[in-house]
Length: 312
Image (cartoon, one colour):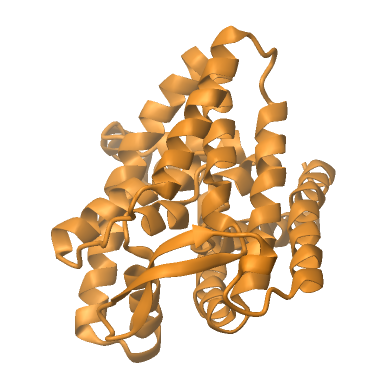
């Protein structure tokens, strides 16, 4: 009974991570961090190494399964896959129908995520403060700079996967947010949705290329991140906290569209936007609903943290 409970709990954590990876503004790595499985996840990813060939020769499939923590990994992946499907269909629908409320939820979510990550810094000295300010400045500059228009060529789709997957193991940076900055979010998410619904060959090739990029990025970045956290943990966490704070401009619920572009599906989508106050918003601001959603988003991280602590 306890094993079944642990399986379900881990699958739900994976589902939360999967949904987070679809949301522009919250990181799957952050969810792993606050639910208490981050270190275990990082060690599991690092276990994928050429030395597994020797392990297979000596100990067989069982030895490899134990080395990669197979039960943990498969359970988590099942949950994540479910979360991605739910996120792709749910988030895209909400973005089309209730964008102000959804962005408000993201805004609250990323504020509480920044607070949570910042609390992990063991002592704020000059280096940590400078890292925080630098991360904030860089992220804010990216949000106000003209966003990339994106490139639907397969090589760029692959590169997008390599870069965006960093969020899976990097608390504080959202893979979907990175896709937004690269101009690829409005292409990748609808393509995944099309592939899941119609199994269209062109969409499947694109999704497959993106997945390969994710795999390459995951194997590479896990080792870099492990070294960074081992040698510069406080500075790294402070930098990530700053990055989240600086990115809030991109998640502001009231943004007027200054220019648009046509995506690969022939749909007109926002290209350059400007954050404004509710009274200057070109549309219905839904002030009360937006504030409520912002509060719900803010509280969500702390609720997840409590659940993670109680289920450790």
